[in-house]
Image (cartoon, rainbow, N blue to C red):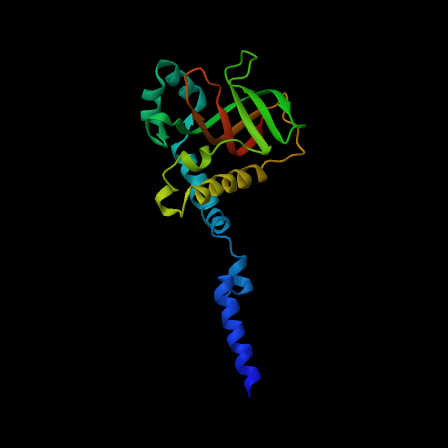
Length: 205
C-alpha cells in the first residue's frame, strides 16, 4: 500500500520543481486553423480587391500630384500609418508598357513606362518576395488595434502580399507588352519611384 502513495508524492514534487503545468491541449482541427490565413481568405477578394478598385487613383495623376506636394497628395488620395513619420499609402491603378523585367530574382519586378517616353515611371512587384505592407495599409480594412501585437500585424502584411503575387503568372513574359494593373504603393518622398504591389496585372492590346 505504501508504493502508490510514495509514487504519487514523488510525481507532485517533480512537477512542482520543474515548473510544469497541466494544460488542456487543442484538438488537431483547432490547431490547424491560422487566424491570419483565414482573415486573408475571407477578405482578400471580397473586400480588399473591391475597395482598391473603388478607391484607386490613376498612378500618372498621383505622380503629378506628388510633384506638387506629397502631403497634399497624401491627404487627398492616401492613408498614413504610424503618424507624421510614416509614408503615405495609396491604392493605385495604371496602364503602361513594360520596358524591363527581372524574373531571375526572387524579388521579381517589371518596370512600367506610363507616359510613353521610354523610361520607367513605376515598378511592379511580381514576387514571390515582396517588400512593404502597402496592401495592408492602403485601405482602412485592417485596423492594428484588432490584432494581438505588431508581430501578428506584420504577418498579415506578408500574407496579403503572398496572396496577391500568387495570382500573377510566373510563366508569362511581360517585357515589351502593355499592361493594366491595380494595387497599392507607399511613398515617402516626392522623388521616389513607386514600388507597386499589384493584386492584378493584365496584358492588354
